[in-house]
Length: 110
Length: 114
Image (cartoon, rainbow over all chains, first blue to last red; front, side):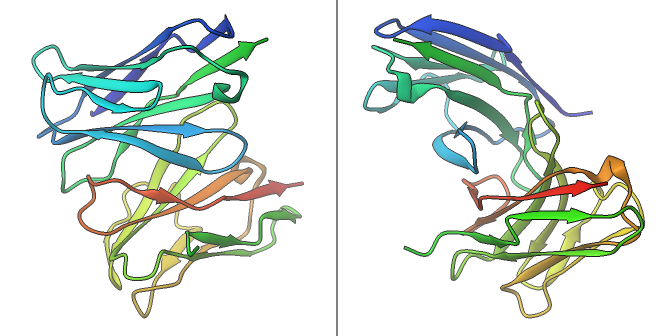
């Protein structure tokens, strides 16, 4: 059975800290790994990763995929209170639905 | 800005009632997904459409759950004879291409069954 496991489940940091969120996956015929940010409403798309070792960046957020070790990390530098959210990781094969992890709840305190 | 929209945003149903949840995907998106998200959990897949064809309904928890997308755009998720364990947020997402590509989520419908 396909599964995605995220760690830690929750994290509390101070503004300005750098955080690393982890996602490991076991997805048959794996094709892509996606990261989403979920505040109170819908998950919003952050990154889609398909190739190993190529970092994707968007502002203070970056992510990389390791297809050999079957994991991805999401880094957030200089965290702000607005980064507080649940970060979801999902794996997909291209012909089956995405499998989501339970998420990491990040709380950034001033 | 035409994102994915869902209605109603909140629904309270008495146990045993039928409910219908609507999803309007992003225009032109061929793929549409329904997920169920319980408190503190990630979204769990329910069903998937490519245009009007329901290609996968393996995640529907029982035969009380039914989804349709008759014209390949708007979709409705129907739950018959609701039970308390159906209480959750129901998320709809659409994607421009295949299932593994980025999916854009609607705001969800929070269903509470009393």
